[in-house]
Every structure is written in structure tokens, then in C-alpha cells.
Image (cartoon, rainbow, N blue to C red):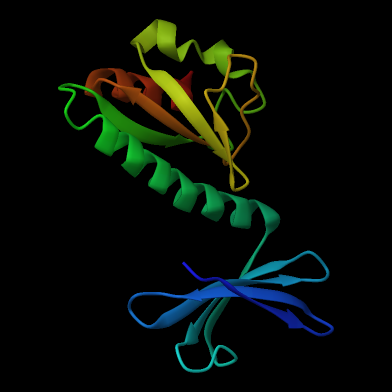
Length: 160
């Protein structure tokens, strides 16, 4: 995928790419630190059809969702031939009892036999996180286990 980067004098920097459907999608990183998600026409990247301002947390969450989806799809493909194994993503909500707590405090593997294989945080992947990794609101956990175990893990992360 070819990403075009353009300096915007006095504003910041635009990074965008052409989708298969013929639209340009990207972000504008403003000098003051804000980020905007943009959609432009294929023939003129300066003609913005939509612009959505994002807070830092929103930009990080969007990055986690998109990156986590790619990682989960890859794991699902790898586990396709293993009966009973499922891959799922869990987002740490602001009201999760495990927000700002070490992941090990949830005892996910012990309580429901589910393995957390990665955490997506602010667009970065933390592979094979240990029990001492502190969970933050907006983290996207990628987990592998049985359907029943993943249902239990979801309940634990939501309710304790």
C-alpha cells in the first residue's frame, strides 16, 4: 500500500492512501498535536469530503481497532484447522475493574483457560504480554481460547 505524505505549511502533515474503491483516506497531524481523519476524492486529495477531528485517545483507539482486526484475522486464519479454538478481541472500557491494573490480576488464563496473545495500544502491538503489563482504557486485547472461555473472559473484563 502506497502512503502519500504531504507537508501542509503552517498546519502540519497529511498522510493518505487510495482505497480499492477509489477514495483517499488518511490523517492530518496538526502542529498543535490534534489529529483529523479525512476522506478525499481520488483525483484531488485537497478536496476533503469528510473531516473528523479525533482526540489523542480516539486516534489511539481507532488505530487499535484497525490494527487489532488485522491481527485477529491472521490468528483466526492460523487456528482455522484447530477445532474449538476461537480468536476474539476485547476492549478495556473506562469502567473496567481492571483498568490501570496488572493484567495478571484478572487471572484470565486460570479462571477460563483463555490466553491473551497480544495487546494493541496506541497503534502499537505488545506481543505475548506478561501478567505484569498494566491495562489501560482503550487497550484492545487479542485472546485465543474456546467459545465458552472467551465468553467468560469477556464477563471477567467487564465485571470483575
